[in-house]
Image 1 (tube, rainbow, N blue to C red):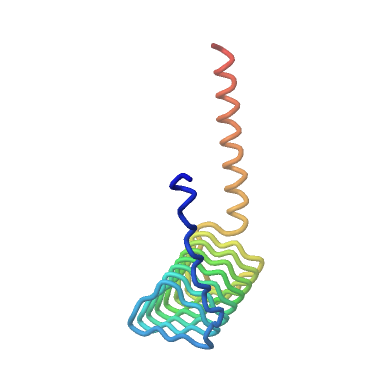
Image 2: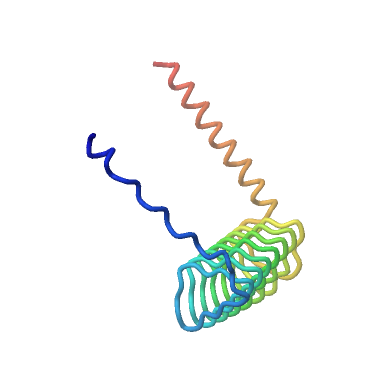
Length: 167
């Protein structure tokens, strides 16, 4: 019998507890992953948050996935939610059914409906936008930029194929 056959397989890992707490409070601390029905972050941060309701005050989260997310004077890297509210904060990338921004900024926002007040975006893709917002690229601009980029790539490929035939 060779050595590989005589070794036993490692024992399976202990199963994780499936119980998710009702609430989780993170104050002036950091966490890797937070899972709870309701998560409150106050002057703290987390890498990933999964919840129904998330409230962030003067804190930050890299990735948040929840039904409702509220950010006050904080930041989020990426949010996927039904309702997102940001006051005096920022979000890098957001996917939301409903977004409300007041004195806030967002890099890329994809939403059905946006309520914006004194806010800025780089790219805003929305069916409805209400309020005053400064955007670099809106839905119409994104479509035009896509068409222009497609034409530019097509022309480059055409020129490249024509030059390749001459050799």
